[in-house]
Structures are given as C-alpha cells and as structure tokens.
Amino acid sequence: MAKSTVNLDVLFQDVYAQKIPVFKGGKDVIEYTELEESEKNAIRQCINDGVELLARISPKLANDFRKHEPFFMKLGGIAKAKMDNKPITYPGESGSIGVGFLIPQAIKYTTTTPTDFANNLWQMSVTAGATAYILGSDTAFYRTNSTEGSRHIIGIIKNGLIEIGTSPSFNQFKIISQAMTKYLPWTVHPLVEQPIEPDKPIYQYNTIGAVMLLYDFGIKWTALPLYTRTPRVQLLGIFFYEEDFFTDTNFKYIS
Image (cartoon, rainbow, N blue to C red; front, side):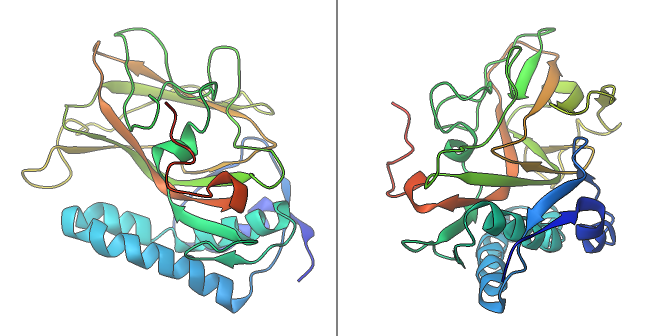
C-alpha cells in the first residue's frame, strides 16, 4: 500500500480509546502506510512472545504492555512509511523491517548517542540534584538512527519507565521536543516507593503517555535524581529496524 500523510490525533484514535495518551511533542502529521495482515501478525507475535514471559515475572507490567498493541501497530505503519515501505517481519528477515523488544543497544546505539544510559546496559550513573538525561543531553536532542539501511524507530509504553533493585532514584521528570517546550515537570505518584509486585523490587514510574522516538524528530527526557548511585533503570517498548541496524548478535555492542 502507498504511504500517505495523516493527522496523528486521527491515527491514534484507537490508542486513545485504550486511555493511552501519546506524547507527540508538537508534531501534528506524519507519513503512514497501512499494514498488511501478515505484518500485523508479525508485530502481534513479537508482542505475544515477550508478554508471555513478562507475565511470569510481573503480570501488571505484562498487562500494561499488552494494552499498547494498537500503539505498536500504528508505530509499525509509521516505520513502514519511513523505511521505504519494506515489509515488516518477525523474526526480522533480510531486506525487511524487523521488530523486537527494546534493548539497551537500541537506545544507546553509538558511543555518542545523547543519553545517560551506560553502554550496553539498562543502567545509568546519577548524582543527587543534578539533571539526569534519560534521552538527550544538555546540548542535544535524542533521535534514532537516520542512516539509510540502518534506520530504526522506537515506541515506549505509557508508564514504561521502571527501576529494578533499588528504591526509586527520581521524583521529577520533564519531556520536551525540538518543536515544543511548553510542558513543566511532572512528579511521581504517591506510592512510587512501593514495588508493583509482592516481594519483587520492581518500581514503576508514571509518565505522561506513550512516546515515539523518531530519527527525524528530537526529544529530551530529563529526571531529578534524589541519590548519587548507579541504578538499573529500564524503558519498556519495542523497536522497528532496518537490516543494517542489527545484522548480527554483536553488531550493536559498544566496546
């Protein structure tokens, strides 16, 4: 199917119906291609494979992830339009757009990618009172890879920022884009220091909605640390990628 330019609020109507807002960052329209049924099934299978195991550890996070299927489907159509209408496959195949669960190397995909995440790990070193950059830096907005043949885009679920092993390190967040800076910081929910599952140190932060990360539109996501430490902080979502972004198991390892 041919790609077209669509209004984002119209595109995300079925996502909003799930009570999932989407951070658009002042972006009103985007290129989009309707998915074939085989591509929807590929995305759905990716989600199912991950959620099945996620549910064994955290049924609550698995349920949150499952509800974002409409968001991921729309993101797939955006990825298809932005990547030359290649087919979407799972597992990814040569000449196609692959889809997978978000891993650290998809967020920090080069040594110079602007983020405070460590190389190859869901981990960042933070200092009490000093701005931490989940995405972006003091001088740069975060964008995914724009190199043709290696492009990728990312979708993060609403409330898809978690901390594992330590009590919550942050109590304020702010997100802006290259087109919009109007939002003030938001604060964490009152019981953020309580784990979301019994006897498991998994803590979930509230966010302002699902987030798209694109290669041609920059955002910054900052946080206020309360402690000086190196917590395990993780983003939950999926990413779509071209073949040369992710050709082998060690291809995106940063040494």
